[in-house]
Amino acid sequence: MVIPPSDARTSRPSSSITRLRDFARLAGLVSFFCAAQAYGACTLSPVTTAMPMTVTQGRLYVPVTMNDVDGSFMLDTGAEFTLLGPDFAARAHAGIDVKAGRDNGRLQISGAGGRGTVTLNEAHVRETKIGGIAFPDWEYPVLPPSAASVMPGGRDGLLGMDFLHYFDLDLDFKAGTLKLWRLSGCTDIHPTWQGDYDSIPLKHTGHQGVTMPIFIDNAFLDVQFDTGAGSLLLSRDAAAAAGVTDAMLAADPPANNAGIGGGFPAVMHQFQLLLIGSRQFHKPVITVETERHRTGYGDGLLGLRFLQPTKIWLSYATNTLFMQYAGK
Image (cartoon, rainbow, N blue to C red):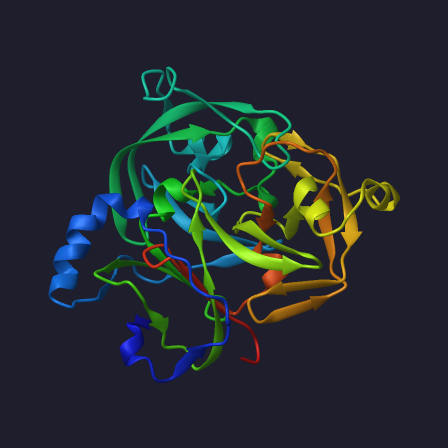
């Protein structure tokens, strides 16, 4: 549960980072927020029941039902779209729709590394149910078999930001649950968690994702918070800003990397110090891309396997990521 800061008594944020505010993505809710603030109201409404959440290879999976067929979808804050695996699309009788809105029912996407794209067909689903919410008549891109292998455990799809960005995400790793909340009239909130936690500012990307600040060696970087990423990946330019030279990368061991767009060249490089919120990582070994390219994910990708939190509240409404760790 989360409350406005004036009522917070049991917890406090331990991060000293100044919060950044960016309400551009909330343009559709501005008039509603203004009306609520006029009365000094800040309300939090649960949108879903607590859904069971499982962790496989550092990724999160939650139940999703389409056309009355149950599936297990990866919760992916780095994915712009919700995607269906080909086997699940067939089981759910999701028919390919050549009249869908994007380019005659086809969509091109690229993954980490920026080395290639995948063309997806779009399929029509009569009804989607997530945590008790029902959505009629949605179109979803369907992954081809060659790209579906990037989902660990052979799961059924990706639950992406086209759905997730409407809500605040409440993830409890000890309880193994996910709840979705809707905030209205709120500009600042704090969880009522017992003990200390980090409060980290977020910025929104052009693809409905979020980025967060980190400090590594000589550089402040802005990386995308990506629950679909395995660990921590830095772009070549971001690593260079932290003092990594081409000669250093040439001496590093190669990394095995694959994304929806295919594999990409990268190495495993040891840095000296990484700061994320209040956490310090000494001599971390991090994946670094060895090619320069334009990325859609800022300076890199940061996944949950690296952070290993016990609780997360991801607030899109107030642009803040709250994280608590074991022992806090």
